[in-house]
Length: 361
Image (tube, rainbow, N blue to C red; front, side):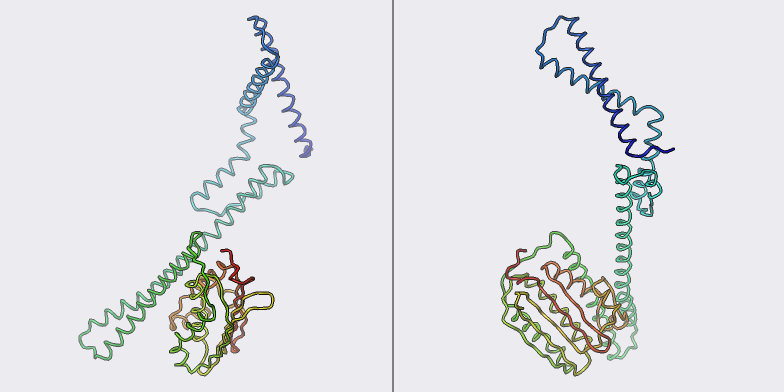
């Protein structure tokens, strides 16, 4: 018959209280004998203080020797050994541990060992997830770097052929230049993403006109949307905000480039910027492009995610633009929403819950 946990705790408390009482009684008896033997008359307060310290010392000694008893040590090791072993496994990089079966030995979730086991299981799960993300990140980076390097190496080797025509040589050089730019952009985006995820990223907040910034970026990209004969429908309210202008510029450039990239010839891109009645700042970019599936929308802000890897590779994408956008918007306490349907275009809406002019950083 198992003793209930509450009864065990009561018995443990009573055992400790009785042990403490016996140690204090022994201390009182010993000090009394000592004072009688040396005929030392001490104030009552000093006698009580000495007795208390001696009682606590004797109690500590008793607990120490009790912990050395084989039965007690075996019981402690029985519960602590699996936890220590699990910690060693995690230190070696193995996060596939499960201490749930040890948890069942303790009835009631308030036992200290239960809390330790739950914390260990939770820590192992989170560390395992982080390790998987790290391995996936390394794999993706290696893949993205290997592709342009292979092209550069292959075409550089082809240029050694002395029988190439000037047209072929220029074509190969253009490919090498394109792949080099792609590699440089990948490196730059990786550095940006790493900086944005750092807790110490410098964020220089200052007031500027958001509508002026958006208009300047749209005009700077005129060669791209003019080449595809896109219709640019622009409606920008005068908006003065306080934010990091350089970071926000990266957001609008990435979003506009995506709309231009995936909108077919003679399509339409709408850019809206306004302030709502409840003082929210909203920027919307809508296009009549190829759109996105629901699965793509779910993974849009994940690193290196590409709905169509071959299409993105040809257009120079590396799956880091939208994660960078998301990080910058999060840094400014905003949110980004995506509405899209295959073949019917996409609508990206960036909303700040309060005016950026009131932003406190």
